[in-house]
Amino acid sequence: MAIIVKSSSLHGAGVYTTAPIKKGAHILEYTGPRLTAKACEGMYADTEVTYLFAMDDGDTIIDGFGMAAFVNHTCDPNCETDQIDNRIWIMALRDIGAGEELTYDYNLFDGDIDEKAPCYCGLRNCRRTMFSEEEVARQKKALRRRKKRREAARLRREKEKRAARKR
Image (cartoon, rainbow, N blue to C red):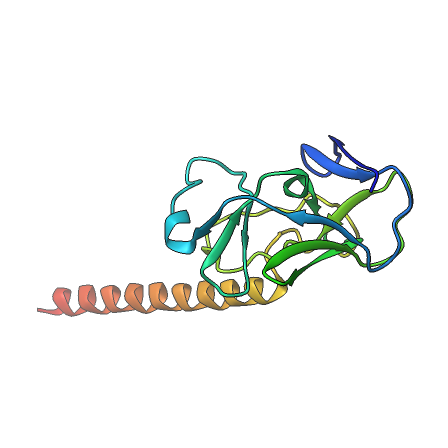
């Protein structure tokens, strides 16, 4: 397959096709060392960029190495990922024209509420994050619970202060 890595308007470097790709084609395999989720904890704590890809078993993580690690995120992708026979493939969601940048929706999950994973695709339907819609909803719910607990604690402190003044 005729693909190259070059500068991308989405983020740093991106992967581009120099020839048309048909819908459903297996374009690239996501390769790299396979680690346990535990071994990856804190591995990239000091950097904003990681190339970690979680396998379906929930414990195996690929630390991306190779061309597939440079495929960028967008909220309206032309590719998707699929695990087939314990391998991760980047596959064409639609026919892709020569010169197009290959992209897929990262659908990040299991994030920290304060963690940022901004999306820079700039498309009309951009959700402004690389987290999945489900993860965004989970994080918003957790943030509402946190705010509710803070407000309850603030009200308790005020009530205690009023009670102390009455004594």
